[in-house]
Length: 161
Length: 268
Image 1 (cartoon, helix red, strand yellow):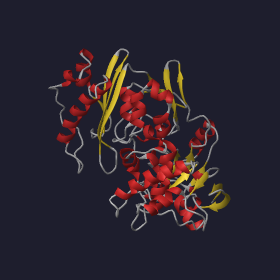
Image 2: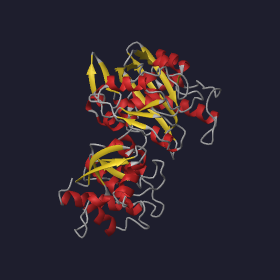
Image 3: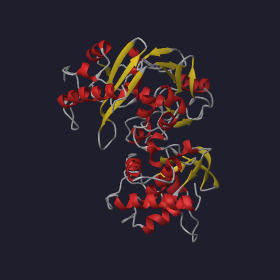
Image 4: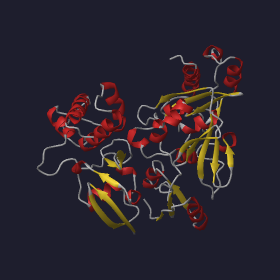
């Protein structure tokens, strides 16, 4: 077993885990943060994307022990229960950026990382290129791209980084 | 995944000591090859030594006229580094083409070179740019370093610490991606160095990255894509799989090499 101590969605967390535990399993099973999904389990689909020290990473391809001492943000961390949604979440809702919703948490975490790195003014080409590591099997991406562009603009207006 | 004991050294010396003391130990940095391989039980180290917390091992700097990139520098760090962008823009571009944004936030240059995947991008850059791979024990020239797919000159107690790149006069990388995996179906790195021209090919060779000497000779006479016209690449020794035949890869090498030379010459 290995002791880990990290910050998840702003909350200091400690645990004693089997070193084999993947970060995604630690989040889902130990912390019951089931918004982060396991899709392909082979680092391709992006359903498991969370932020590690503010950067998008695939939590199915990372050991939880390697997150020791770091800060993790999951989809649950974007808006408190009952509080208004994060502008990017709201944009996905408004622009119908999801159908079944399975890929959505990963899409939104990727989208926010994208805004942080590429700025608020995202053209379609940039968004599509940056979505390379996120798969959606319902939408055909059209409305996801529209949602991200709108979400980025909304983030600029609400001054969220 | 099979059980293992996890170690997190804080210094390079601690990491070396752990590697020597523990039989069946493996190093991990970004883990973007090793974790998937362990999940599939294709690798089952008894000890896992995490290099990601060794301070300074991810530094990127100019030293003695060479670009020195630390082993745990991530692909995103290299792609976004103003130092790399100024010194060897082609290398920054290559790093920005690896995998996807989330993968680039974790994968490292040292991991890529230690693994020597036959379709990885960095081996082509190192071989074409005549880089030196620095370890805890010695300096390895890229020509002797890559020893066939997934095989390198690294010894069991050796850890890559840095990669030193001489600055080329001109360089460019062209990659034809596998649409699903984003790995190189074929990638060609062309470098016009101070007194040499080197062309390295990844993705295509059945035995990993290799230099294309016929192209190098032609480019030494004239560093133009025209000088490569009419030169053919033999399909012998090239990969043939469900993604493409050896003949297709041979054809792509020619196309990509010409494009890379044009790109290095500032023609797009």
